Length: 292
Ligand code: NAP
Image 1 (tube, rainbow, N blue to C red):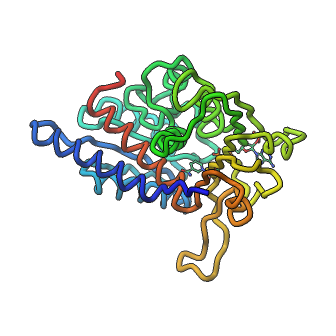
Image 2: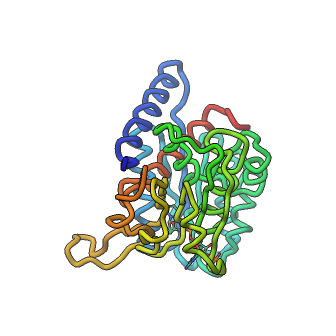
Image 3: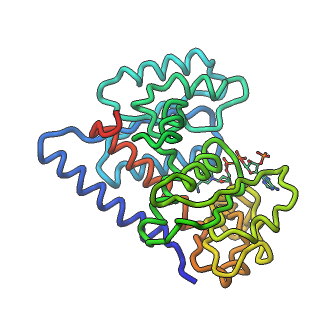
């Protein structure tokens, strides 16, 4: 079993990005600039945004944070988005999800200029991904693809099962794994909460991507011998032994599944770190004008 080490890979990728930022600066260019919009005080969102900002600093990006109270109106948020769309110094920006229920996530996503949508959630960027055109690929699937590449994992002709069909993880992951490219060329099955024979389907996977948000859901009896297992799940569970009061749990019961796998990601230290690198990478692409 080989551990897909997100810590090691993300350190390498961040060093590569930092080197590129230094090259741009020495050629007289400006620092890539990522802005984040954060609404309310959701603990997980606060942590994710703080981590994104810290990672920007690590690689030499400029970052800005725009905070709003949970009661902010959709109109006020839209005005902030229009301002960021027109701010020539901002190369890309994200609106941290989830948003409060009175705000339409679709309306907000569609208001973002696709050229600055470094999360890759705008319908134009999703459509470009489906057509195989240059685009910002949403960060988590992009991070997983990078893991396949850097560990030279073969994907062509494999059966890839993706558990979860969310717009930001499961669906783009499935689309990317079936495309005629590397990583890709898989036969893909997407599972969700209405899939009746989930255990059998998972057991037929050469590559199993778990993205459900249910800790320890994937057990050893659901995994084929020598499968590649990618655990996207990241759920906070109470843990009195931690200073924060919680631990992060994946969707895969790691201890019993790992011995059966050819490759597996740990949680934490796996896909989550790759996701942040993918966002940095998309911001670099935006700054260099390589997509639009
Ligand atoms: P989501 O929007 O809640 O989607 C979960 C998906 O899992 C849905 O499609 C749901 O099916 C399916 N599902 C739920 N219970 C199931 C069950 N018992 N059997 C089969 N399918 C089931 O979640 P998400 O945003 O995709 O996130 C999934 C997990 O990944 C979460 O733990 C999240 O925190 C984590 N995440 C991690 C990263 C990272 O960087 N590592 C990034 C994003 C998300 P239905 O569609 O039928 O409801």
